[in-house]
Image 1 (cartoon, one colour):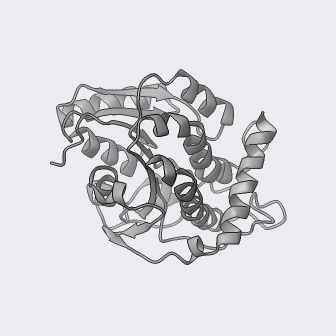
Image 2 (spheres, rainbow, N blue to C red):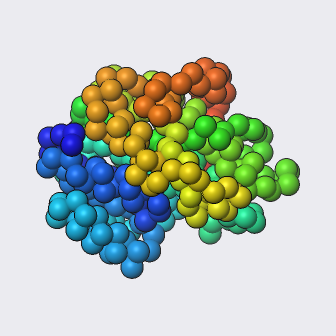
Length: 269
């Protein structure tokens, strides 16, 4: 068991296979307080009960928010009280047909990319005030095909696998962008590939999975609790090992993507 030393963790996607395992493993660390961000109240209540029972940690609770919606992320940050030491972005969706949020944004881009961007952005002041703090972005090695001119598959034919790969490339690039912007404030930002787990998400993409949820959660939890996740920033990891990320080395594309994401937030007010 690694020690959290009383850290507060926020975990998104915690009703999914990997996200729930991440939340439970984090709850098992010493003196941890774990907050799950969920869309569905009933699933959230069950997840909290399951995690508290399995970990023996009663300091587990949930907040409701749809992470495809900027207004709900903003309200979540505004009502947050106290410190936040570790933000773990693990929420993702892979709808098989093209869907849009009520704001008219393609669902995978809104959830998998803008959701990560907005959570880090809206919680940045809280993370800075809680420093040393860290962000763990659950990305994927299944990444690529980013089109900065068609992020929402308006011109391209929508394919959920292509949209997912694009979103995970974007997550790895945004990790580098935020790492540079938050480094002066002792907030580390790293990304990783979780294990290959049989989940609703992987099934929607046409894959199975040969690892358990606990195996899938291993690297994200390691980055969230081990000193390596605080000492290093802007890195990408697979199986607890740093892996070279060509996406993050394209500084111009990284900054362009950051500015595009910021423009969505500006448009929302």
